[in-house]
Amino acid sequence: SAVISQKPSRDICQRGTSLTIQCQVDSQVTMMFWYRQQPGQSLTLIATANQGSEATYESGFVIDKFPISRPNLTFSTLTVSNMSPEDSSIYLCSVLGQGAQGYTFGSGTRLTVV
Amino acid sequence: QKEVEQNSGPLSVPEGAIASLNCTYSDRGSQSFFWYRQYSGKSPELIMSIYSNGDKEDGRFTAQLNKASQYVSLLIRDSQPSDSATYLCAVSGGSYIPTFGRGTSLIVHP
Image (tube, rainbow over all chains, first blue to last red):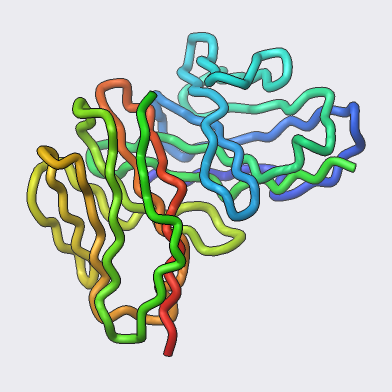
């Protein structure tokens, strides 16, 4: 299955600033997903990012707040903009693998906004 | 609205017992079904995928799918304390966008 390198693993940020999270995949993948997970909660899909097209955002998430870049089939970034303490969460990227490989996740970014 | 329902638990079983985790889904067009394990502070990891009705076995794990009842389950035989984790059920259809359940917390006690 695909191997994903996600950076940074954690960060503490000041409110009003922005953080960009990167995911690098060791193989070409068509679909990449960005999730948010509060501690003890399930995964909330932020957006789906396909190479060469604009990301598709889920209800409650907007491009101005969470701009996504997908320049090629192995890389994507998610930016959390103008952060507030409510943005404190774990952010995960995920890709759809080939055949029965299912969805593989990055190791996550633990974000704390102070 | 596509929904995937799981009992949040916790499900507590003694070591060596069979743990049974259940999941129901709302979208009859769903084609692919997955079980993930997530340890606290870690990202989800795939345990099993199943695509057709019936049982699929992999070591101590068996996934069961019944599309008519819109039901998928995961059985863990000979449960070990290291199996203690949250188990997420995921379902996807033609769009390949997965829907995850809230997860069931499993505790295996010695």
